[in-house]
Amino acid sequence: MLNKVKTKALISVGAVAATSFILMMGYTVGQHSTAKQSRKEIELAAAKLVEDKQAEDKASILSSDTVKEFLTQYYTKEKLGENNTRIQPYMTESAYSQELTSQNDAMNQVYKDYILDYHFEKADIFVNQTTNQAIAMVSYNVTYVSDLKNANQSKTNQTETRTVKLSYSKLPGKLLVNQVQVWKSGLDDLDKATPKTLEESSSVPSLPNTTTK
Image (cartoon, rainbow, N blue to C red; front, side, top):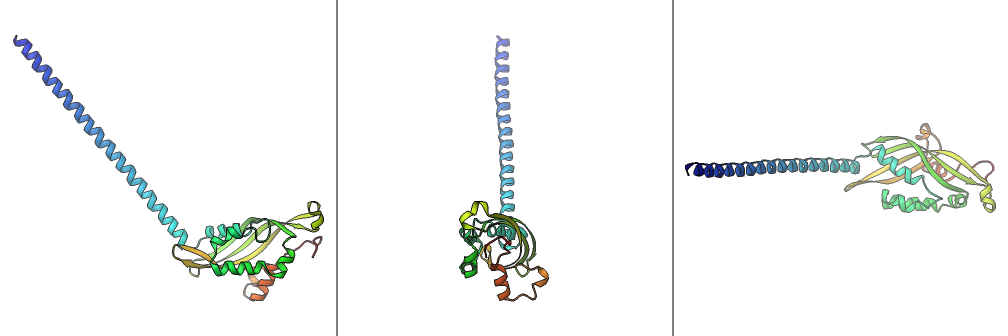
């Protein structure tokens, strides 16, 4: 009888111990899971802060990547004006208005049907973060059509180069192009250039000899 009582007592103690062990393990696993989850949340929050800081820097500090992004849109188009909706978000209202005025210039209108399929290739970009200005030597490919009546058989592909000066305005949360100046000559002629020569240089293309003028 005594042995039975002892056996029951031992079984009870064992059951309590087993239950306690299970509860303790569950608590430990729970703590570990919570700690692991908290650590992951902290890592995600830290990554978000880094991303936000990078986005803030990109929006407020002029970089070659920002300039290249605009130039890629500016020099990639099927024909004059086709890319207007793509470049507009990068420009101030005044700069975009000036761009439309330039496109409607008589010289540009004469040549627009003869110059097609612009494709940005590359750019050597120099950025001044103090003045929010950039100068770039841009190369792009373009197709010239010498005879509109026989366009499929009278096309010439050519790589063009332009020197581009961009002036940016810093607005809340973003940088926008406020002025675009384009000319064919190199950087050495920048100081000699006048607004009139810049305008003429940018509007008159370097047409192949076979292209109708």
